Amino acid sequence: MNHSLTRKLATSAKKVKADIVIKNGKIIDVFNGEIIEEDIAIQDGIIIGIGQYEGKKTIDANGKYISPGFIDGHVHIESAMVTPQQFSQVVVPNGVTTVIADPHEIANVSGKTGIQFMIDSAKNLPLNIFFMLPSCVPATPFENAGATLSANDLREFYQEDNVLGLAEVMDFPSVFHQEQMMMEKLSDAHQFGKKIDGHAAGITGDALNVYAAAGIKTDHECVTPEEAHERLKRGMYVMLREGSAARDVKALLPVITERNARRCLFVTDDKHLDDLIAEGSIDYNISLSIENGIDRITAYQMATLHAAECFGLTTKGAIAPGYDADLVFLDDLQTVKVNQVFIKGELIAEEGHCVHSSYKTDMIPSSLLDTIHINEIGLEDIQIPCPKDASANIIEIIPNKIITKHVVEKVDSENGHFQPSIKKDQLKMAVIERHSSTGNIGLGIVKGFGLTSGAIASTVAHDSHNIIAIGTNDQDLLKAIDVLKAMGGGLVVVMDDEVIASLPLEISGLMTTAPFIQINESLKEIDKALVEIGFSGNFNPFLTMSFLALPVIPELKLTDLGLFQVKDFKHIEVIQ
Image (cartoon, rainbow, N blue to C red; front, side, top):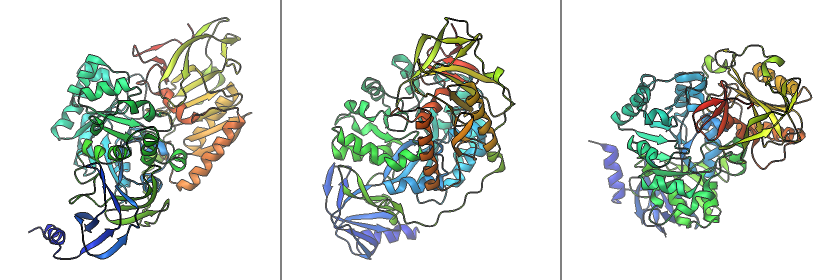
């Protein structure tokens, strides 16, 4: 006999007192789209009744609104540069009680060991962390990552309780042409009854039919209402993303109607730690949507029930009998002012801070701490041959977008080589393979950063995470690369051959075990340093730079193998 179930039913029937009863709250009923004022009875961390109840412990909500815990439907924890343990302490105070994480950043550097580290690190935390397995490591055959993951490599992870399915399938050509490795991964997900996430940047019409027919049911890459409508028409879920580099929520809100909102949910995808602290997580998506005209209750439904339904989380996303007691107390619905956060009925965060103290220390596999393997790089290795009066294919960034423009402009030349121009805002960019000492260096020209001196460099470069650097001059560019090698990865700002700010990221060159407050202070120092070298934009330059190496996002990108034209899926010359 299931004694736990018997106890819950007896409590629900009011034969015995509940463990906890919450009174005087205004409950968001996500099923009916209403606000109701009733008690919430909790037994063993599960809601067992809505109505009038007595409990061994009573919590007075004092008239606050009570929402189901917020769910982030797609996030790369590594983009916050912290471990799952520290990530939990950052997002839970913002009302996020569940995230669907894709560890493909660390997988591209450290393979199966990286995935296992993330899964293990996520266990026994207050935050509910579920995983989707990286489907494209490397993302494409047009770059070099630190690992290659086959269907066989991924198969064993489906036995993990917190693995829900296959993560964003970004290699559309492999789906379209039914290439064997991709077909095996898709087939395994179907066989195990798992979900499959999408990444359908620029895919339309018949191509989108193929994508949906493969069982890929979500997309977080929509940037226009028209794209979102196309996906909804094909039965897909649309994820409205508000990260650090890609901010698409406002642009996509016009697609949402009373009839289709059930297929829409919120995600952050890639959000830097400083933005999570300053803005929030899914709570920010909610408030932004309400501010721009979305019905308040609809916004909360998208942040809770809709995300839970998308991933088959049948005990998440609602305040009703049989659902986990993941609850958010709110002072105000409009601004999403979070007061308290409960997970499984336990108070975890209050007034912006975690009060839960049982956080563990992560054990880091040694292989994750030794991931920078590059040859000596000299001036001759970063020269771009260029005759006088030449035109070049240039990557032009779009602030707060991860798509780019392909522009052709006249460039300066000196001694037969490209010369960066501050006046034209044409800077040199390099991507250096850092996993296997191949010596591969991709060189290009980028426009839109507005730097007037110095250089910046990072080991965070989606998705292969090679070293990526942008500079106004070769000396500072080389210095930045050397510093990254010496500190085992991270972020660095250089001016006049001196390091003026840095943040070491010792775990696969992506994350650090340092406390999130310390990391945030380092990021503030980096922001100051960026101003010193002339940056004045309204976007995050490091996060924007990190996506310039991702060859599945239009239009022009740079990999360790050279300049890549996404439209035709081929490398092209820098100088025409």
